[in-house]
Structure formats: structure tokens, C-alpha cells
Length: 91
Image (tube, rainbow, N blue to C red; front, side, top):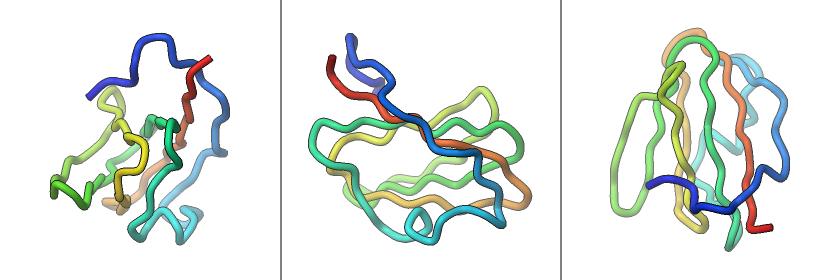
């Protein structure tokens, strides 16, 4: 599902690697209501898992992942990786 039309970037995380990814991103969590995010992979691959309904995809450069509000999810590096999250909100 794409980020809704009209939503704008509100903040961006630093670039993380397989060694610097915050532990919170590696376990199930969810964004707050109304907060959408896009996972941008710059190099390598990142496994993106959604808890409910269960789904899994492998993200890589040119193939970002969308995090919907209040949907439990987590990521897992697949070898060396560089990525960041960009959060979006309604204007």
C-alpha cells in the first residue's frame, strides 16, 4: 500500500547499517496513529516483516517498504546493509 496522497515527509532517521540498526527496529513495534514511514535501502538487503496479517518481503535499493500506522512490524538485515526510515504525516 502506498503512502496516502498529500502526506509529506516529517523527519528522517540517520543511515543505519547491519551493525548500527537500533535494537527496537529488530523486534515487533508499530508507528503511532497517522504516522506512515518508508524504509529506503541504499545498499544491500533488508528483510521486512509485518506481524498481522503475516507477510514478509526483502527490500533493496529501488524497492522500498511502506510502514502503515499502528501495524506491528520489524526488520532484519540480510548481510551488509545501509538504510534509513523517512516518516510522513498529513499536512
